[in-house]
Image 1 (cartoon, rainbow, N blue to C red):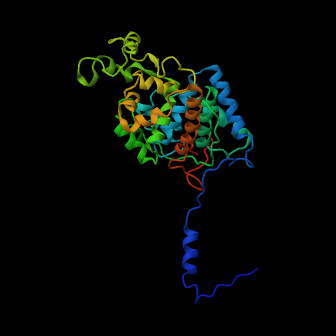
Image 2: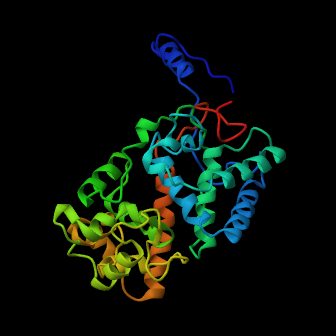
Image 3: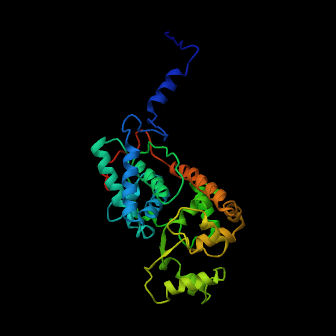
Amino acid sequence: MTVYFHMKTTPNLFVVLLAISSIRVLGCTRVGFYEKTCPRAEIIVQDVVKSAVKANYTYAPGLLRMFFHDCFVRGCDASILLNGPSTEQTATPNSHLRGFEVINRAKTMLENECPGVVSCADILALAARDAVIQTGGTFWEVPTGRRDGLVSLKSEAEDLPSSRTPAEDQIKIFAKKGLNTEDLVTLAGGHTIGTAACARFTDRLYNYKNNHGPDPDIDQVLLLHLQTLCPHNGDHGTRVALDTGSVNSFDNSYYENVRAGRGVLESDSELWTDPRTQRFVQQFLGDKKNHELKFTKKFGRAMVKLGNVEVKTGNEGEIRRVCNKIN
């Protein structure tokens, strides 16, 4: 059927058409984005991550943390992967990130299978999910279709949330990214795997808020344990489990530790002492089987939400040929 427009009844038609033609072609992320263009994309990433974590467990928390740090600066656009003298990688909060070689390995394999199709940003999002699964977490579907960013600045990564960020500020930082307080508490549960260097929390052990003593909210048994691992004038690079007693398992024990004063980082401890976040911590406490399942399911949903923060799609950015430099 042919449709004819009469200019007398549609005086703004050409203006509308002109406006439409000038709009950039934008898309959106969706599950199965590579179903036709690179059907084995997710399997390839999954196999690479599985092999890497099996060889070195620390890749699991490393990939998860890298995804967080990427999404909080210019959105989830793989800007964290770019090399250079003043890129995000060189910022202080990113100084101990690990897993870059895992992403590069997956990219190489994908370029061999379907050149120029799968973005580094999508590889990172998939790898973060697969890292969680390899440590006992629950599967969730990852929407894909992101494009890779062209800009990476050290200065923009210096203000990432730190181990000393109060709950009030954490809430504000997450809100700016379209994430609510429940998202904050749920995603903080990623600390159920991984470690932190003594340097990130020694002030809590010896001179909390310049009081010349420890943080009074730390469990006394944990305090002695941490002081043994991190002596006052010892090696501040020593790594300590964030989830005491369960560092290798993606489970809800992190929240039990936070409630009991066994949160290693000040930012974790704040989630229990602040009533705005405490009520969300409580939802993951109790019967281990049911509450653990609740946590892992909500974690997946929060990761999908995080993964859509300020994403580039359509004809924005590019699909990098290698992940550590723009084309």
